[in-house]
Image (cartoon, rainbow, N blue to C red; front, side):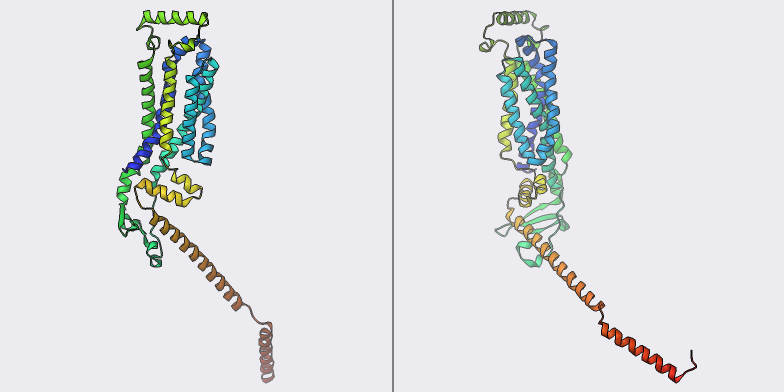
Length: 359
């Protein structure tokens, strides 16, 4: 596979890690949140479920966002929302703040699941495109820049006269299996869950690791937090029991990494074609394929489109001329028609004069 193609796959698949991490991090953070805010069972259930409420809103709006503004733009927006949600949760000092942050994260999780998969699917589809040999090779050197699937390879004339060839069977080996590319995102989702559990285990307090494993530390931990809450101490200034903030902040770091990575990735060529931006789509397609010089391709495709347009105009003019000639030949002069009729009548009268008894 080409290096740039691999970079695009890995960068977009970071959204899968974000998806899994933010879905799984609550399992380690909830015990700490419950102890910190002295949550009731109903509040715990609401904090967990609000991510799914946000996901419902994201599922309803994510498709429109991707279609209207592009796959890359949608991924960047989800990264921003992931970062805002992580920051909101990290700095939350009330239960309502935690709930709001969870809702925002849920929206980002749902839209990420739409945009990342669409992007991966469409950048991998460039290997499946069937290219046809351009007609009218006699029109110029630039017009014959690309020879297509008849020969089993794509040959592109570069500016220095060299020929860069990409075989079709190599293209299929490199990336036409879109299912394999999309499965990378699924693997990253599982990796995100595993990462969330690992972070919870490493930085969680004894309480988050289980009261059965550390009963004495657990009881002491609960006693100190309860005393501080009852005396209205500034708990936010004490690091005891605030490991949940770091857990939520981890998702923001992943979002930041994907955001800056996607800034250097192209938009989906499929979406660009749908928007009528064909030259940009061609550049992106050839960049993903690893073709270094796309100038000749742009010139050749522009020339091909111009030839097709000229050919269509020529065919239209020929058809119009033929139609006019047909119309002219089918029209008859009335005086000529009258003259012919008179000649026939005179002939019949003359025949009856010669043979009066003939019927």
